Length: 102
Image (cartoon, rainbow, N blue to C red):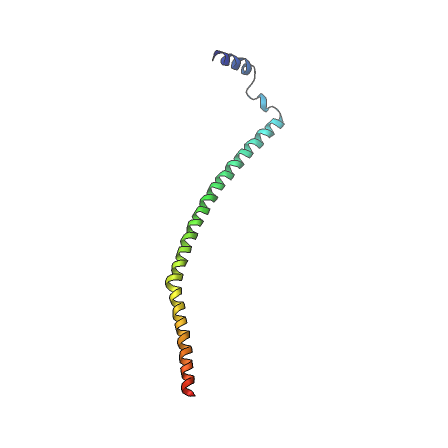
């Protein structure tokens, strides 16, 4: 522990705090680093929101598939059966009326 404090005192005692940022190129690097970090944080937040939205869309799609299946089973199938029965009765009555007219 004593060696670390001596090293810290010797290394940082004579170095001013902002000596690293004394050239425009170093300031540019700092600005680019901060901008890139903010861009990455923004993209991570956007990705999290996109994942949540897609998860909700997936749930809605599943519910819609279930609803369409129920509509098909309870509404469309009986209508198909009734239309088939009507077609058969029309064919049957059409054949019978032709026989009676002959």
